[in-house]
Image (cartoon, rainbow, N blue to C red):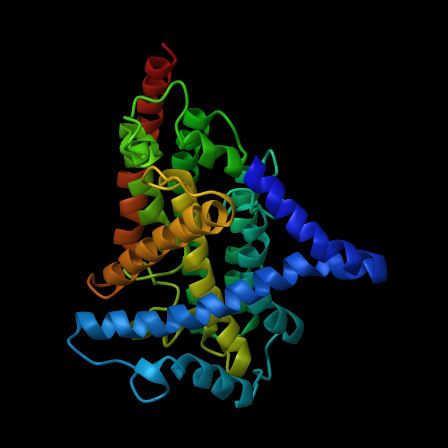
Length: 364
């Protein structure tokens, strides 16, 4: 609590003068911080995916723009900004223009309740996990209306595929989250992280606090695998990128989009990838908690042991998603549905029963 008090005093010293001059500025600070975080991380992720795919395929990847090609993503963003913004003549113009922002919206809303460090959370809602489940369902609406508003058969088919895929894979994702709620006994994401930091009930040795993470319990391990597989489908990443499926549907739901509207869909895919990785790190891998015993105090305990470990875990999970994308082939639409209805959902229901037994055993 001492470290958190130090941070609050430091933030109040900056925010209080601003509030006295212009109260409305204070309300914009969290929004601007989230936007800067998302845009910056997306630019890095685009460069990282190109490098990872190049490494897997024995290529070089971006090389010429900046050191190691780091500026390539910036030039691509400038290129999209200068491209012509076209709208099909028979399209529903209002819905067509709004759809990309609907897909991008969940990434902004969700980061409000995710703790990135010890005490570093915009809003610690006591129903934070249900809030995440609710806002995570918004993106599918944007994809569906994007396909419908384009007045294009390929786009509409991509939108319908997206509806079937996202609604189907939300079920095992939700059931895996239920397991964590049962184990932690709370819907607050901050409290879920702290429940993985040990306590009087902890069975892990003092020098190995990472063994308290949910992924090191049987129901938590199964739930983590279910969540990560469903997350690949939720963010339209290969092998579940059927809503785009360029070999069948030209480009799927975003076929008619150009310029920065297409760029927003692209940004939304990467920002949502980072988002589901952050949620997975929070629920299953201890969030910002350190995997080793730390003696740090003050600044280092908050930003080093907290934020540092959180982003290390996210980076590893994102790399695994990229690895899967550039390794596995795309599944067919019938295979995608069978994996969920015949595999993930029955296993998730069995895992809930396992979680009940685990909670009863730990409580005893």
